[in-house]
Length: 280
Image (tube, rainbow, N blue to C red):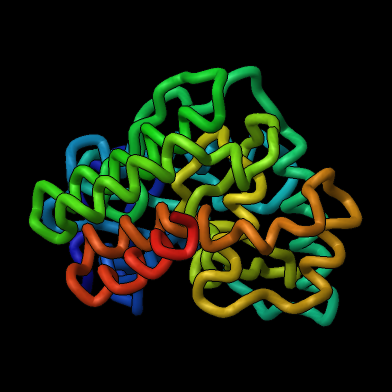
């Protein structure tokens, strides 16, 4: 039986009967909780999370849920040690990809006057700063690319020449990227964070929520394979995103390549340098 932190069980209205470990991601430990009244919940914990890690995730989930576009697991309890969420599980129907495309476009239609978020959060285990900025180019340059790049430099994973290229690119983003509003985005939208609910509906999990460029969210769906064509067709039919967004996808995904380099080390350096070479 998995350990359920007391700080979480104290927030439940019914005691936990069982806590069965289940396969999770590469960062957190996960368990299926069964309460004494028969309800099922999802538990995620980490043996030594960064300060505010789960509170930041809970804030992101709540913000996405408030967008009233895509199904998001409800936050049941949150503490420094972990997070308990609504249990959502099912099998996707034949219309899943189209629904996801339409719903993601609706989520991105929630916009703000500034980029950033109500608090800093994390992309994986990496701190993700979310300062409020009106300039999206400056936000992506400073709070995304250069933030990750300097971490990689300080750890010795990137050299002086790499950082010079990154700084050059970060100062010229408007050469490739069009003006876009600050949209409510998931922030880490690879296929592993796209889940399915009990009615076969799309569910988004494990966000790095902030107000950013919609194209950046869309680009992340291509980083480890792609979604079905019906997803992209439905998204573009319901969004103002330009149809040549895919030409810019590697530039947006440079942020995630840098993050993976910081999280997992050397093998990602080649991809970062290839992307830098492509745009510089």
